[in-house]
Amino acid sequence: MGNICRSPTAHGVFEHLVNAEFLAEQLEIDSAGTHAYHVGSKPDRRAQETAAGKGIDLTYIKARQVCDADYEYYDYILAMDNDNYSLLAQDCPEQYQNKISLFLNFAPNHPLQEVPDPYYGGIKGFENVFEMVDIASKGLLDDIKKKHLS
Image (cartoon, rainbow, N blue to C red; front, side):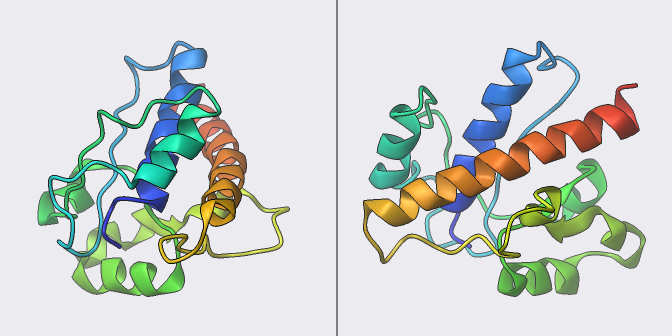
């Protein structure tokens, strides 16, 4: 939504996985929010601390809002929850609608469909989000390797 909690965590986790597999030159990773609440801000301190505890740096990420060019440019446009999915789908041109999905669709064995927003909760919420996006990031990378890198 504001691009300071869930999506930059997913951005950092996914980038870490991509780098570990030496695929960074083949993939471009970015995150953005559906709202302009925090444009230019770094990820929430709690998101940074949670990721840092797992060896992932988020300090270089700065919040931005989704722009029209993103729909054409990126192959995957992933929403953390149904509200953000709806906002993306409303703004997305018809020919790019197939690029939009929920991030947890890449974690088919996960019991939830949405990554909850941890902003108003404690550190445990950020830890739960990290675990969810880690699982979905692995599934996403598998999907990309099968569809685009094989």
